[in-house]
Image (cartoon, rainbow over all chains, first blue to last red; front, side, top):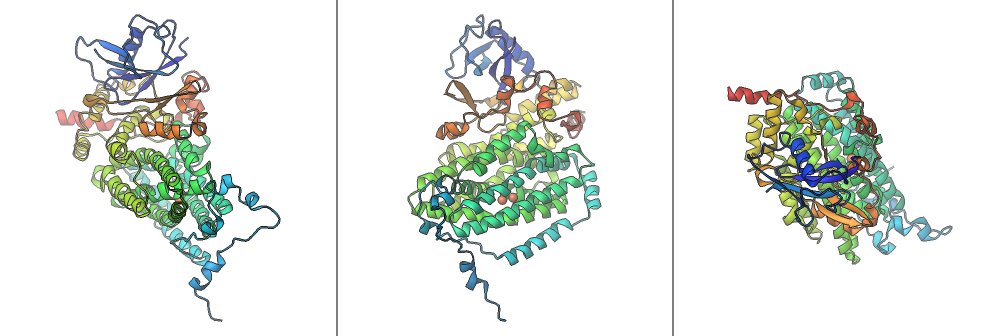
Length: 86
Length: 496
Ligand SMILES: [Fe+2]
Ligand SMILES: [Fe+2]
């Protein structure tokens, strides 16, 4: 169930957002994709073609592996992640 | 019979301290309420209020103020004025009355606690007038708001707001409960009278009243002026208290009270007054930009006052406060527009081509930052994609301020989250100063559930209307675009 909140800091946005995920099935790559779909064209301009999104832990800038689930990546309840252009 | 001059009886009449015999001094004035700083009674008795007034004079001058405020125009004329007002001015009134009225009512009890627990007789005397002042402020604002109740549901919120869990109201309660209602009377008075009233109420009541006059809303302008004249008097409780604290070796404590409260109140006013002045007030009637008002009324005056007392400017002044004047309310304004359905007032974009030009001239770089988000919003409206103007993701909120956790968007993107892990919970702060305040006294703040905390922990009912039910917002209470998106049309015209 999508009951686990992450804090999303998407490049270009004016503030952070909250995304509810299932930590055991949602991957880091999916977090980036959902954030992209929800925020680009809403608060952020379309990204330059070919832009790859990188997800990093906000606290220490540690890049997170796209293929890992949120739980496997070790993110805590309300962990903040940066989603930036790679 | 010859009348005795006020100055010959005033000091004796208000010197109401005595030595209790039925109870111990500490039972009558418990230190945790009256004075946790252990300052001797003889010192408190030197409290000398700069502004002296007798009850007879007080009643007479308050009566004159009320006559002036209530009779500028008849109720019918005020309603007529409201009907003809621009959408921006309507929104400004809706926001003001919903956000301000209940904090005035709250201040009644803050002063009443001073009257009961202060050990300085002069302070108790002034605080009595303070309570009466705040009763008047609550009444006059609710009265004026009530006149417009047939015009918009938003004016219900003058009465209703405080009893709801609307996120804006939760933020206000967190701030004003902290500085006015949950500390001993000395700390609360320094925070309320000095930081809040002396530094900031000028913004909402003098600066806004200048805009109101220019706009031709004389009754609102007069009401604001009469309120501010009371504030200017009872705000003076703060200075003698600080002098007594300093004389008794409590400078560090006084400084910290000011550093905490100045920042907390700044965040509230930045949103309330900043958005009203730079976005809602019609362009032609803007007296000064919010930044110019803050620099003049808050920056210069507050610094002069604080330095005259022998205190320092808050530690974050140059590094954090001055830069925040340029950004915070612009970021908040975007969120307020996007999440408009969660607010009781109709929101105003305030970003037509002419308004953007003004914003860029007052805040150089606005187009490359905040303007980048407005470009996206504008395009969506012009293309008829209104559903894209309301984000589906919830905003993250600061655990101290209770507003959105924001920074600078666009080409100079810089949004940071300051975190604290405390007793197994992660707290998020929008600014290093908010984090610093939490760290000064984690026990005070740790159990508070902000609006987003309540959602992610399942306290707010699920489902599409859960958030609205939780905030007591039926459909008619939810804010819309106050101009029904017509502002964006000016871009189409500009393109043609
Ligand atoms: Fe007041
Ligand atoms: Fe006041």
